[in-house]
Length: 74
Image 1: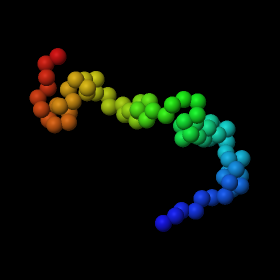
Image 2: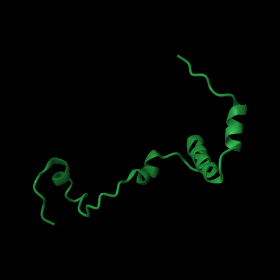
Image 3: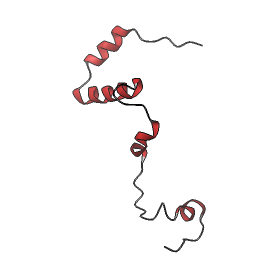
Image 4: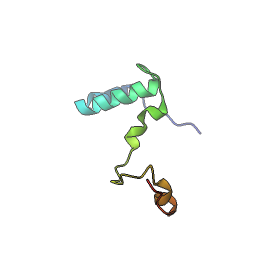
């Protein structure tokens, strides 16, 4: 099963209509996709996936929060 790619002309037309903010996002994506400018290291961007939990001892007490075990002493 093959997927047809959109013609380059259509891609360029869509790029022309993007607002400046989205052009910057597109540029960043293309740099990451092609690896130009810096090596592509997937873990380099892991901080973008972080979630603010509000739990200050999450790393130290992870067994408590994940498995319900008693909290450990400091």
